[in-house]
Image 1 (cartoon, rainbow, N blue to C red):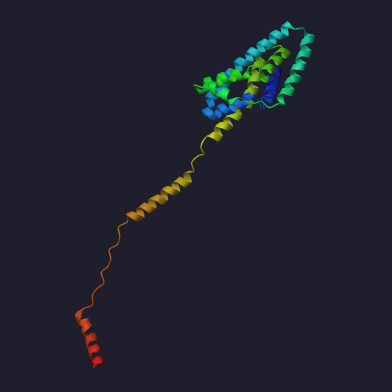
Image 2 (image 1 turned 180 degrees about the vertical axis):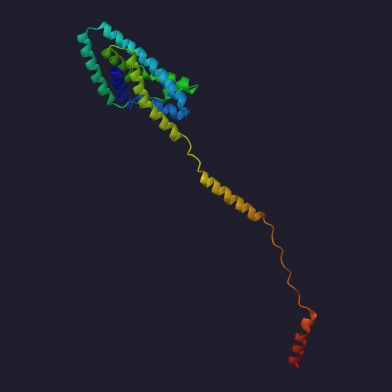
Length: 213
């Protein structure tokens, strides 16, 4: 358990600003499929770190303890300095690898990007230090997934279109129905103005003739 926790913490810290974290961001924004991308990352990281841990365990058995102690000290110091330098990612190379399905593209791209990376060297050094393989591989894989999954998830969320505002849609639909109903309402017939009757006009004519005399 101690080897697992230490391995997870070291790899999670060294993964901040690493090129594989940038790769997770790029793949998530390109494919927008979180589950295949996470599974591809998990498969590639497990295989790559298992090979690195086996190499570290072999070095621990082949090298004298005194030489191994000084070698591990220098290795961890170099990785600490390396972690302060931000990595860059060649997008043209990634575009050639990121072809096909999201799972296959992510697995291939992550496995290639991890070759010679500081997290792979850290896995080998941790396996040599603790003289064990499975807890170190589990811890380094866990630390890498904890560092890369939030980055990919945020990329997918920012790439997706905003959620529709249902209240505004309902209001527009209600206004449209009201406007349509108003224009479909039948027009009221115009009322005819009644003409004055002749017996009503006779007194007025007599009054006009009397005034003229």
